[in-house]
Amino acid sequence: MTVSDSVAAYIAERRELLSRLEQFVETSEYRSLLAAVVPLAGEDPEPWLADWLIEPVVSLGRGERPIDVVVQPGGVARVEQHIRWLATFVVN
Image (tube, rainbow, N blue to C red; front, side, top):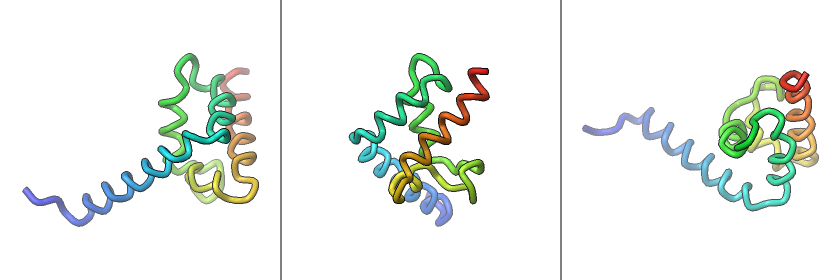
């Protein structure tokens, strides 16, 4: 069976996102976000954070992916602030 063009495009997009995620997890900025996400994800926050980073997040504005935001000037701080904002709803 041959993969359709739309499925091939989806797979290519996911591979690209995962490649960017793989590079990002090696940074101190990632570790900062990981520390911020503990109230949301409990004992093993990395799977939650990894998934969240590559999916569109409507509450970031325009449905941006956090992995796209972190490379913008001030983006890591913006994403970290957003995580802390989300945590206020989970913790309280």
